[in-house]
Image (cartoon, rainbow, N blue to C red; front, side):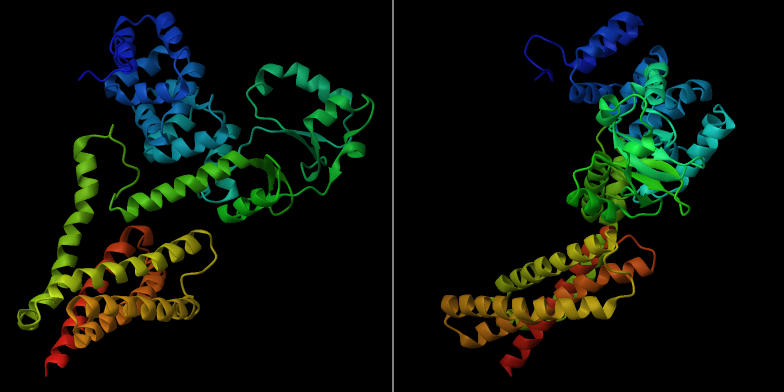
Amino acid sequence: MEDSDNSSTPAPWKQLKELIDTRDLASINAFLEQLQLTDTARAISRLPHYNQIQLINLLSPEDAADILEEVTDEQAADILEELSPEKAAAIVDELFSDHQADILTLLDAEDADAILRQFDSEDAEELRTMMSYPDNVAGGLMITEFLSYPGSYTVQQVLNDLAKNREEYAHYEVHYVYVTKSNDKLIGVLRLRDIFLAPRKRRLHELMVARPSSCKLTAPLYRLDQFFDHNSFSGIPVVDENGILEGVVQREDVKEAIAKNAESAYLKASGIVGGEELRHLPVWVRSGRRLSWLSINILLNLVAASAIAMNQDVIEQITVLAVFLPMISDLSGCSGNQAVAVSIRELALDLIREGEYIHVFLKELSVGLINGFAMGCLLALVAFIWKGDPILGIVVGMGLGINTLLAVLTGGLIPLILKRFKVDPALASSPLLTTITDMVGFFLTLNLARVALL
């Protein structure tokens, strides 16, 4: 069936491709303007790569920047790499500062340097500084488009500046005016509406809220998230060690970063290696990212299967164990993955450090004992009711109970151990835990059964 929005109208990306082939810029702009934002991103993603490059080259830098704002950073970087440094720099210049840094970081160092050389030295240095910060701290999340004025300015002076630079400021997401000393040290803040309603001769230091909330350049993402959870502000100013105002972190950018980190962790835990995967990427790239981890899982599963191979004689004598072994492995694995998820989240939020093994061990020990005992008793009861064999119930119940305890303890500690050895916990924790719980669960249950047979 034809992939389109309805039975009579071609899909947006097909219409857009036809317009690009005509090189009719007016028609292209008119078509893009009538698309919803989500349709724009989808249409650009479905275009062949060469058509994407053609489109961006046809558009003005400002319109091209609007397009790149709607697609993923990875797509934007792929497109910019194919443009001349002059064209790419003109487009990057139209983006918000945080988006500029995000995209430039994804480029090859040579391509990024070529683009940065098109900027004046001060702007290029500012961008290089922003690119040096990780994307999970305030310095990597902040924007540098904000309004600040000396405390000695009058309201009228501020209004004059707003009128003079209205075209530039129209692109700013302005909610506050920050008040500084002559050396750009942050001393106060005002809502924009307070400026418009205040007497024109009043000075900012007389109207401002003194000693406003702020954060350091190195403030971690989880601290910013906590701040916005407890405050209704739309942004928080970012200062350096000397209190100099450097930028503003917006609430929406923090929420977006939290969601992106969660998505990245989920992809890695699912075995998508090498970064974000979208279906517009080349098939060999997508296949390689998946196979790189699936092939390792073959070896891990062979290790787990060896526990069964060494105890085939027990299974031949108590064939019903073959029914319970997958249950023991799966149930204990689920318990362990819960502990993995908590450790990965706490590591990401900097609530635990990679060396706090005892703390994590003790916290998970109590949960593992309670859950292991409860689940072991339930499975033992099921086995007894089904087969009427108390020995079978004891074997599978003990197997599940002990394996659940070990899985919870192991699941809590594996991310910390991997982190210490510079391996991404989100990528490797779950497969390693699965191998351990399978191997230990099979070995433990089968050997308990062997003892029961004596």
